[in-house]
Amino acid sequence: MINFRITFLPVFLKALLGTIIFTLSIWFMASPASADLQICNKTNNPINISLGYRAERGWQSEGWWLAAPNDCAIVFNGDLNARYFYLFAVDDIGGGTWEGKIYMCTKDKTFTIFGIEDCLARGYERTGFFEVDTQNKADWTLELTEKTSQN
Image 1 (cartoon, rainbow, N blue to C red):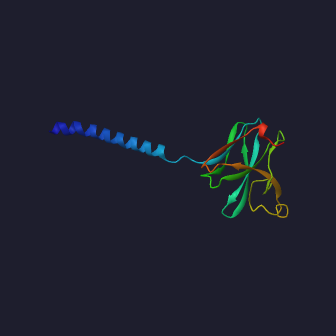
Image 2: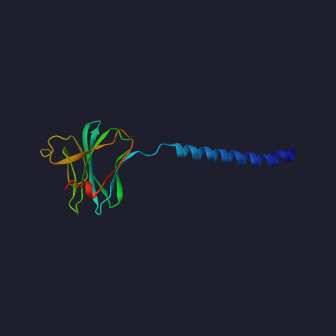
Image 3: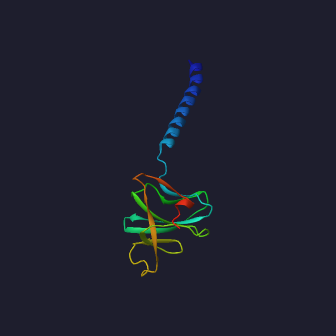
């Protein structure tokens, strides 16, 4: 009987440890993935990106994110809380822009601006953003190419 316990215990501990490791690995794999709004630059030059969206306090615009050629920038972290986001991007080297007819406030340096009214009177630039329909998905990736440039 003593020999049985001595040989059984290591086998039991190995099985228990294996079960614990398996359970933890399933738990980590099942944890939710990060959901974000990601903009990928499919051009030959770096691009600067600004984002506009409806926040708790009202309209908000933010910038700038830099996306190197063939790289991506996450411009909104976490689950997307709105269907529509608005973007303005510029290629300072090649001169192209990705713009639209939804006007929001921006400035040349890093910014977070609340409100879209009276941009010039408040000391900001008035910039045309284009709409991105995320189709109510939790995350979205958009590719900007030279063909999608508005200029």
